[in-house]
Length: 466
Image 1 (spheres, rainbow, N blue to C red):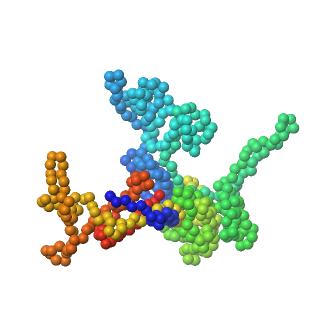
Image 2: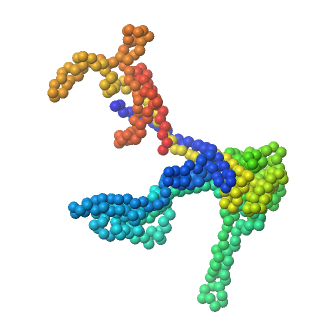
Image 3: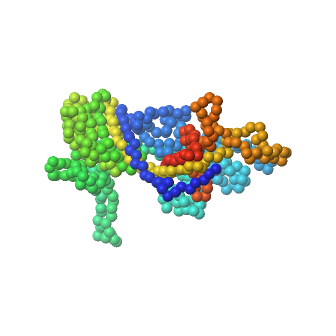
């Protein structure tokens, strides 16, 4: 085996920026991510333990069901065969009974629920409180400090995420003010008391973020009284679509946002970011009601779509219960995707959201060179020409190979009988990558072995995501 050290310009570390496409189709109260069907498993109705419009992070617990199992274990205790049935729902149980711990570590009766790993039927992560003080971020410092030594802190899989839709009618308050009580004259303190802290909606919480982008376009104004944009998100109909980052990565690619509104399979409206600045214009069908108007804005870095278009997209040809069951209204952009909110179904309407995300992948590129005049020796037994007399001496202790044995000539000739002139030839089938301590960290294999002769050199380009 020949080993070569990478030179200064043989290794590059790059960042690849990719833009994976996303299609999110909504119909009849259900959503479908990238046309993913709902696949049933052998023990579950949904093999990914989530609906087809959701993403299951890491896709753990595939076709698993949340239920404890029963197992039987046989072990020896002081020469006596003991058979125990695990019915207490623990995989690793802890007990103060030292005998139980030594003979059957997975089974302990009675088990301490705080210090035992429960068998839920699902994969999940856990940590044991010890002197290292390591724990999950979801475990507060107070809860960790209150836990006993050896207590098991757990997480839960699957982690799922989906796109959501909220509708804010004009009459719905965007926030409630806190109630502050003044102290009575008889009170021992003159401090104010907050009896109700107040709250803000998700839309109102985006006020500063929306205003931050007003340098891009005046449409990025939470409240505006300057022509031609006169509106206030606090008192107008607004639809808010929230897109988790797992769907798009670091940022939605500007100009790729497209929203299609269908009624009985016919496109009645389309929104696009034609200027790649986050302002959504109605661009299709040509001549449709509201065509060319601004119907909303997209916050690409934060993953939100704010829809304000409240005109009748169908131009009086269709009504449906988009807000309240049994109360038909004309289709509007504020109702886009409303069937996934859980409040209505709207069986005659369907919605398609398309966009491209932005994901950065760290990549290392290595150039491994096979120099001229080198790597023309092989330890493969077929490399040499084994004929009678190949061994100079053979005994019970060993053998000595003839030093003058020839190398097999595999050079093809244009004639049938004679062979071509001899040329030392090998084939490179693998390239191993080693770290500084000569630990093999990667193997690169070409699709077919590469022919190597003495007067030729080869450079293999090897890429690895890190």
